[in-house]
Length: 79
Image (cartoon, rainbow, N blue to C red; front, side, top):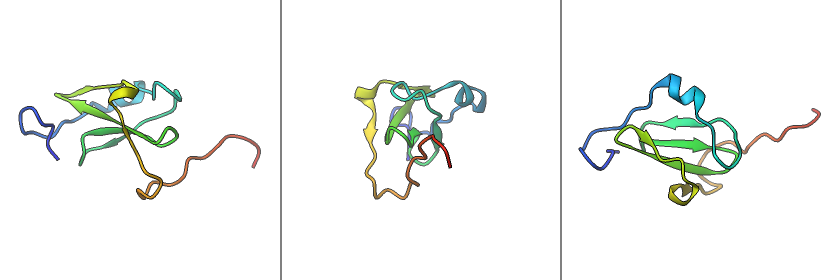
């Protein structure tokens, strides 16, 4: 999938990815290079990356369906 503006795939610096967190859950994000999105598995949201800039606004995020192949989020607590 292309970024949309210049026809190229977006990329996210791995160091930046370590610093970013979901604005709703404060949890980690995973990079999806095919869709140029940052994925919050707990919030089930995909934040777009445009021109290499993560758009970390929940209003801009795409909701992820529960049948998208992602594993269910792990909840904290005793095992």
